[in-house]
Length: 375
Image (cartoon, rainbow, N blue to C red; front, side, top):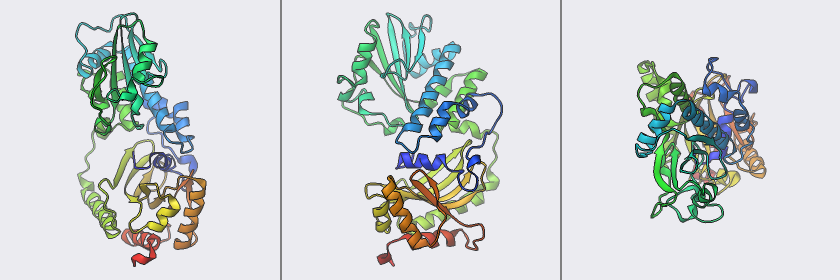
């Protein structure tokens, strides 16, 4: 997710807020599926009601994903066999016979595959949340009492003499690596969700599970929702949008390495834009938003679910005090503005009656927001 995870999640959650909050989400299908179960569940409600608290909504998504994975393992032994053999590299002698699938089996386990009195495989699953040191088997905190997962797994499963641990994440390259891996439980490795896709002859249940995980934001599986698309007719518009935003970012010296922020989510919409980084030509705005933030906002194109597409500039203050200061600053620079709030995050967008083109609008806003000594 973006540099400011909690506030970016806020923006995702309220992408449809302008104009008609009741249309914040678009149900893309009425057919039964894992994804539709998620959209109608308390997990989805927790995501939209997370109030911007760091990780709260993200964790609800992961809890649902783990429950769906456990369900697939339980009712599709072939899929579980594939996971054990191809993803985990467990010896062929270990079969699914006699195993139990346990979701949230204690603090140390998102999902546990247990052969009582014999062995256990603990799966730590991550989608948006980061892997914490006490969950990382290559760091010393993993074995430390009382919170280290290595320590807790030994306490939880004393009768299972074979103990394994695997991390399932959407981007294993971002996980910090220590100097060594633990031996008890034996560390299988860091694995990506996309590795679950390799099983041949997938049943309808497994196909739906993988499709739904893509809709929940796992990049490698998102391609599944783009089947049957022929997008060559949109090439010209896509190239123009890219070059326009690049030009605006360069004009205001937004030159950070990972400045692009693009996402497609069928239930929330589509957006493409660039992060507004702290400092630089926006020192005064940074002081209002919070000097500790690396990303103080975002600008670009949005097509929220159920709402007309728009161009907008977002701001990411993290506290009520910062929100008041930032809105006061923005209003003093832009004039009377109708802010669309999402907890502390808020945005301004081009008015329907505006005669400014895209370049003109972005520049008119950013020019007024930049430090006056940058003239």
